[in-house]
Image (cartoon, rainbow, N blue to C red; front, side, top):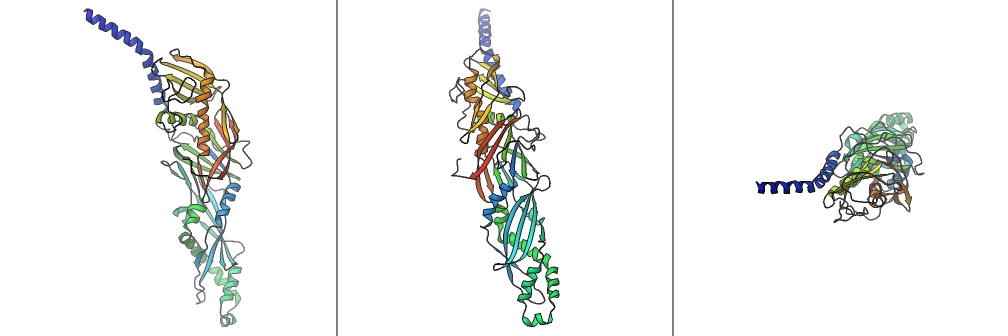
Length: 428
């Protein structure tokens, strides 16, 4: 009986000592479980991009000069073989299109030497294609989009081609053939000529559709699930839904932000997506600078006593940090702050002057909220810089990287004004 009493007392004392630690460990486990493995598919997009057409056009234009000319066989006419002309791509422009499509307008001319004989306008609509595993959005003319191209002879018509055909006829034929007969024959064969042009472009210039008249955006380790497109008169808007375990997306991902740079390129990401990205990185160790544990100053430390999780609420002091000491002192604290952002020499700087301790859930470890936010709290928004500046923009076949020019924060999240420049050596 005495032995039982001593054992029971020992178990009771052990339970009393272990109680706070078990509570803290459960709170951390519950936090991670509440975020879930992925977002529900019906949630709103949590990242948006604005790309102005004129900027895209300027990036694509130099690459057009790299395209070779494609041979186009002319149909026989009046019993004569007319041989070949050359197709030259003159321009590619990004244009508004139906919902969830990118519009492309291509102008191609048929030439004999330096003589421009026929101009054909091609209108295409490109649906987005997501590669979730690679985190890549593709906007390119696949086979279905090429087959659906609307091709029309320019309003200048077939007069120049007809004149060239007339010049190719032997003199004896011209003497017995009225010019209007040739004009009518050329006009009647225009659709066949355009069909041959499209076939030649597809066969001879695959890079035209796969690279030059294409946009590809790779967001690195940010997992993508869905893309929606909307065309404004001046810009292409892309709303992306990630697979991050965020609880809310952007209220209106297609709302054009005020005050973006003159170039008009902008990226917007919800606060919930940013904090989910941070938490995922800390849990999975996907970012070397975030080992998952921290010291009392919020600095990464693989041997640190503290584990942290971030969250975002659309209220005063929207950025919150739950700080756990799951062993040792066994504590759980919650602090919150209003982050402020600015751009200094292309780098995103984050401050949180009003950080404060909101609640002590368990234990009594003393942490200076402002100092801890100065370490870890800033990293949650700084991850937006990683998303923006490590994204690869392949536009017109050339690799571009974004530089941050402006930054603003509000209750929903962060908006970055960007400029695109040629990519340097790979950073990853």
